Length: 321
Image (cartoon, rainbow, N blue to C red):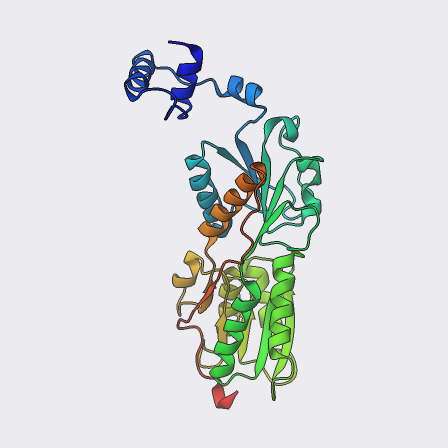
């Protein structure tokens, strides 16, 4: 058979151009010979590597593992590969992991990072899809976001309905868009609400730092906050430890709410009230957006909805708030 016929069959482009009987013969011969397409040769001929780079701030956070799972599932269906790369400096400048990213990749997907941190990787013409990042960033070819502000409003409304009026925001010290957006949305929701006060304490994203920051804020002079809104579940676990270290109870004395709905949220006691983020969908939508950009199409732009999951760490405000 001709090279063209074999190429059509093995490239799954034979329908309507090659008979089914011929396609069966080609597949049978390939299976008997143990033939596999030479991806390097195919890449040279097509000018594509069929490889995407997924850059994340860290591999230790469950959220990013789930983002990768979603991206890889979509990539596999389209015969793409996904290389997972943690930025050495978190959200800071990420080095090019290859001799030349432009020669090794078709595109970059970056989760919860600033587009400026990816310039060394993306070069000048490599498509960049940003996840959970500033939608107005001009460097991004596409942006896939969660309805972060709505999730924060859901937490605030939940705590206000429970009678809380003195709030503490335990915020992440990581200067990324998603955390800035959480702070902005919480302040906007509580601003002007009758009798409501809001303090802010910042800490790195780990349990020990969150514990220390929450302990200082909860023991500071003045009326103690009755509700702690945390930027993620790891910080919320630290806040719960701080409450107990001060001889107080969760949620009887202080309610604590997290963000992300990591496995940790249902492992602590009491279980955390938090906002569930569809991380796999974020990764899947990011890969779909990159494929659309490569095909010259317009990616879907709607934010992914997120949902409050009330659990035992929040309860009625003590003494009416």
